[in-house]
Length: 356
Image (cartoon, rainbow, N blue to C red; front, top):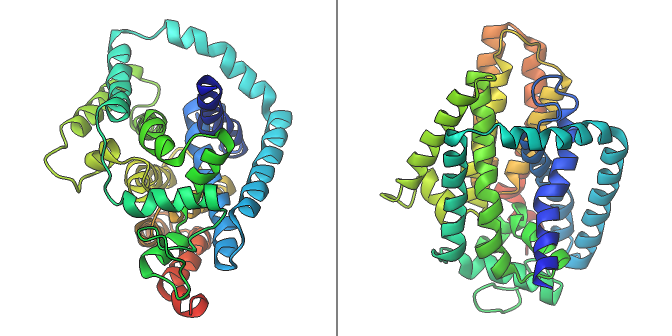
């Protein structure tokens, strides 16, 4: 039974995102097409984006958790079927190449991979941190066991008839519901899922983003990319001097929304911004759609993600328009930021409009 539950979590957090990622990477027409790590990263961004779009109105309208669960799972299942029917050959080709890539891995690659896996294992087996979990884990447990979404005080268990500011922030950035959905689907308790299993998967996911960034700077030079990844890994390992840096968020509480933004979405947004300024490629519709999806996914992680995503691409859009002399691109980038603006408005004023 434990093996089956673990398999279901792996399918939900690795298999499904890799398949869904093809819906984005297949239109990039560059090195990301059919790239497993790129598929995984952008697949997670797409899953977060779609849950954000579905969850926020349902939560505000007081729908039960099971409604969100079945609607979201049904949409994801349909998209998986569509992606498999459309991009099955790309996926099969990459699967066939995978054993060859494993055999070509040198000592440096093995050491870097082991250092990353070790970080996940340390959090899984040795480290246990409960920062802010008095609010987060109970909200996920309430969704799974009581079929309610942010309707009770997560600390006292009292029903919220008049609203609570801390809980409202989670309503607009409902990343907790993502873990609740994975928990319900896999029958793994939310606390076990978030503290023990998620680090084993999402810490490597964060390094997958850094691998893509390394690819931007070093192209196909695997040795330089591995050195870059090794240095990032070393910086994170020795970042325990503060609880506020990105390494501490990654290695102490990656299951939390702000940690996912800091460790996964912020580097991914930087990568997407860098791609806009490449001289050897033309910015296309796929770039703007990918930015919109990633910004929307970042909105699900925290209010921090909403605000910083909007501020970052507002600045990038102006720089892009000046350097590229592209007013159309400026407008399209602003359109890509619409999710941030919508959820930013709800974050700032929604409690007065929707909660008495």
